[in-house]
Image (cartoon, helix red, strand yellow):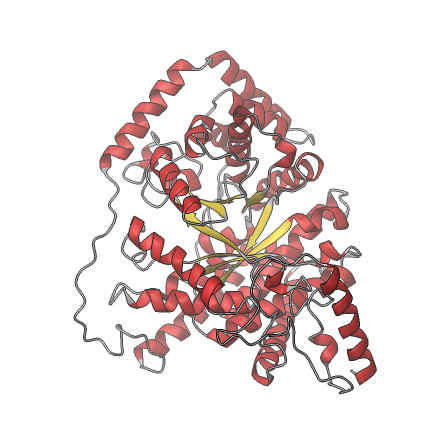
Amino acid sequence: MDAADIDAGRERWQRRYDAARKRDADFTTLSGNQVDPVYGPPAGTPYPGFERIGWPGEFPYTRGLYPTGYRGRTWTIRQFAGFGNARQTNERYKMILAAGGGGLSVAFDMPTLMGRDSDDAHALGEVGHCGVAIDSAADMDVLFDGIPLQDVTTSMTISGPAVPIFVMYLVAAERQGADLSKLDGTLQTDIFKEYIAQKEWLFAPEPHLRLIGDLMEYCAAEIPKYKPLSVSGYHIREAGATAAQELAYTLADGFGYVELGLSRGLDVNHFAPGLSFFFDSHLDFFEEIAKFRAARRIWARHLRDDYGATSEKALWLKFHTQTAGVSLTAQQPVNNVVRTAVEALAAVLGGTNSLHTNALDETLALPTDESAEIALRTQQVLMEETGVINVADPLGGSWYVEALTDRIEAEAEEIFERIRGLGHDGSITAGILRGIEDGWFTAHIAEAAFVYQQALEKNEKRIVGVNAHTGTVAKELEILRVSHEVEVEQKRALKARKQDRDPVRVKAALDELVAVSRTSRNMIPAMLEAARAEATLGEICDALRGEWGVYREPARF
């Protein structure tokens, strides 16, 4: 790019920066020196390829979505939490919010993630253990008791039964007296990544996509601020994918959901801003920063060039980041504080919009109050003490970072072409569905995980406390244990709730839900009525299992 174009871009950026709202804060170094809000080539200097880097707030958004960077607003501290029953988790949420958390992120237990009630035989021994147990809208009432849902952004990490869980959240908000059109938050809903990596599905892909399309339509019309789909790379990376695979598979899934919205007749400029993303931040510091920068650039270009988006917000890739759970070790677990801080810093330097930091004891159990507080304080130290929020994309222009950004983008583009080649019509969706059916994604992830494990066993890659520096004076940690009484009490409360509700109303609502599933009508209103009647998650999912069947992954060797 020649000097005149770069200088014109700087002037455009300056006008937008001057017009934007900034935080009332001290933007100086620890020594008191003023820093500029962004840095770039000196005036009058050409920079080959600068159009791929650009200025913050301008296409292709490599350097961030906003001209102000974090000077406008910092990332949202959104700590993922959930354990035991709704009352216990409600107490943890209030602690997080009181300590400075900016939003909530709900972790559900395994029965809930699989669309099962706590009294289901499949749930035995699992209730409340890896997240909170939610059986009906009454549990949602308790989960958010004293937390005004109209004023707090709420993320829910669940995919298979995401839609019935979402309508239970809506019922809880209704009972609080909230204006549902004002609700803000994110529902994961991403079923593609379940078949690719996490394996928490209910039905075959097509019925799940039907529900997701209905949800997209409903939110676009009724709850415009709420993001009905968070496309997740986190679980893909945790399963063993490389950074490039995580990026490419995740964005390909996102393109698939864009194609779903377009197939429903939705305007891409209207629904695309409701798509958000969820990435892993791993330990290779610069590679992760490059991955985040490349993600924004790839998404903006494809939305504009392939899917016809014209509005700025439709081109924006907004993403939440969680530090890498798979990087944490049971050996010398206090070292996990350092790992998490490095990963969180990479996410921030990559321009994340919200962030969860893992707790040091998560390889052993759910976090204790103390370890959860350390994880929260890790973000606050980065935000308040390091100065990283003063400058937008401070590593932009680094030869190393730009080369990594270009390389990971090129790898992702190559993977997109391979996915398109899998399908019968050249679309991303057809390629994804065929790749799921053939085990293409899982095979490539397994190969990447195997290569990394071999490198560890040969000491070519090193993990402190595992295959390097293994001596320690550390004592055993006290960990959080979920009592068996949680399951006993949850089942007792569920039994009482079923006895107190109107069985005629529940049956009528479930029958109507099944009837609607046999038509092309949107299923959300019927499911919402079932939740209002206190139909349970298991009952709603079982009604649809009876209609759509249960998906079982083909055996592969």
